[in-house]
Image (tube, rainbow, N blue to C red; front, side, top):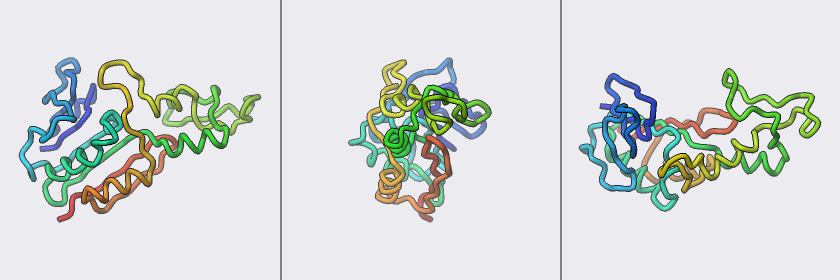
Length: 185
């Protein structure tokens, strides 16, 4: 079995069980608030866990507990995939004055490109102001949609190591932390 935490509308099908705090149009297999421990799955039975855009919605005080729970659920050698906003990059863009309205809020063809003719940033912008703000506070569309934790690459790396994960690999991205790691064999 594979678990897709914070699945929302992403029904992966197959061996994946979609886990979310809300039932999204019948796509949620298990309705579960991730603040409630232990999770309703048998330890050491999950092959893979996907946690995309949801770990930031759990209090920073519980990040370690969630990651330990993920580790406990995984089989030896099981994979964990995480994606969260990269607040480290967002802080860097703020300091370097690279927040500009000419950068699209949503990626077009997977790219966030500034307008080279922009009078404000001269094409040096990296993130739209709304996208920048959402990285820190969330969209706040429903009860689980506020950000209660922020992540930098170093913070997430340390949290994963402390939770016992190995083979931690970050995939480059302009405004997200995308990481794959494993439970030791």
